[in-house]
Length: 66
Image (cartoon, rainbow, N blue to C red; front, top):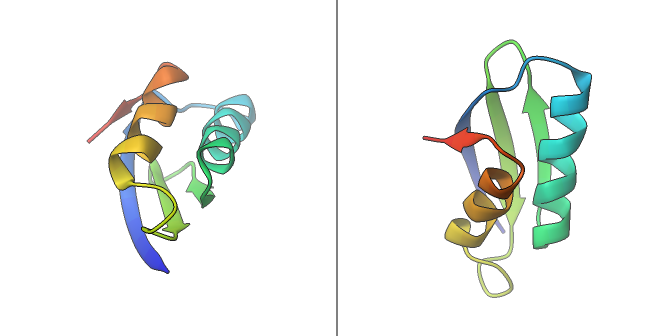
């Protein structure tokens, strides 16, 4: 399992947290948002899903991933 922290711009409320965590889960990974820090800690199996796919899933929800 790989673990990384992504900076996500545009999150401001609990709806944002659920949207980002849901997008990460649908991509095949686990994510935990820190709303105050504007980050999401992601754990994923790189044999099953790429980091680029996880970033794209978050961006599809309307957020910018740095």
